[in-house]
Amino acid sequence: MRKDPIGEKFVSQVWDGGHFIKTNLRAKDGRELEILHPGEWNTDAGADFRNARIKIDGETFIGDIEIHVKNSDWRIHHHDRNPKYNSTILHIAFWDGGISLLTRKQNGEYIPTLILCDYIDRSIGRMWRIIENEENPCPHSVTISSINPELLREILNQTGAERLIAKSKKFDEQIGIKGVDQILYEGIMDALGYSKNREQFRQLAEKVPVELLIGQTPETIQAILFGVAGLLPSEKKLNKETKQYLNIIIPLWERFAPQFCNVPMSADDWVFFRLRADNFPTRRIAGISYVLAGCDGSSGDTPLLTKFLNPLAETGKTSSKLRKILMPEAIGYWARHYSFGDKKHKQSKFLIGKNRADDIIINVILPMLLACSQESKLRESVIGLYTGYTALQDNRITRFFSERVFRSIEIYRSTANSASRQQGLIHIYKWFCEVQNCDNCPFMEQS
Image (cartoon, rainbow, N blue to C red; front, side, top):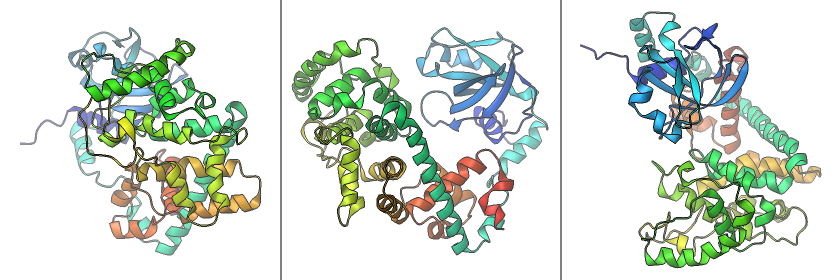
């Protein structure tokens, strides 16, 4: 006999797949709800879905969504005591357990609860069969896979270019508000946090302006960033090497701390759980310190941008030179440590790895360089580098296409065989798959 399907995974699949009536939604307390974006699956600690967008009585909220079988599970699971759930904007429960109308968070705020079973439009048994058989959520995968491979690549060339231009325009709009180097710095920091500390790195970059860091020593930059991030340890029982390092860092932080007395973050804000040690935020902060320390503060108003512009003016191996900027060698304390006070590890060569450096180049550096390129020759260099860049490491979106759209890893590999074409897939996913706009999908137009 099959086990009862009503578990949190089932409820999450109902929510993620949109298997419910989406009009006239009302929370348990009677407020009107409109789902603009259901959010993205979260496999780490915290709420089940991140970056959701909903309207509550017409007001838009962005944040997390927590899924339960019964609304009483919120308290049973002690989410009302856990600050990691303070960014939750909506509580989803399949069944109504009859408790209070609102869900209380650790910070004392209350959020609405949606009872999902009130809005499903078919029997639970049929819903289970639909979800159980949804091996391929793209209904047009067979049709798409029949398109000529050369035409597929041409479509991705176009959508990849559209994504580059869209990113470039977004940067261009922000430059007038914050300045070139600050926007570039925030973009790099955002990418360093991918995916579990993205918001935290973005906040840190906003709290500590790049102009304060340019030209400082790596240790000074580390002191400021660790201090504002709330990551400097307070325990007295630390190993000798950590104490020696902190004896250098803490006095540096104390010089700058008064400037940030109203903006510090907390160590609890940062995620280390289920992260590879190389991706720990402590290592990433150490890495950016060397990138910024290597900028020439006398090179004009945009020393960080200039640092990335220089390789384009030189002949050959541009991608390698850009990558080298973003892959500082690990020296000193962080050559053998991933976090404060941990045991010594084998010497690491780089503080930022190749895959992360490549992602930053494609998603941040090249779009920003394009936004700042006034000369046609420079624009051509940026676009040429972008279109010729080798394929990046797969992410959840490219895996979606390889597993559920093309239905053949060979077709996927021969189609998305460059970084720009992978970006083309991401562009299609964001603009068409994610919002279920299949009729206007570029692939369907060619089928």
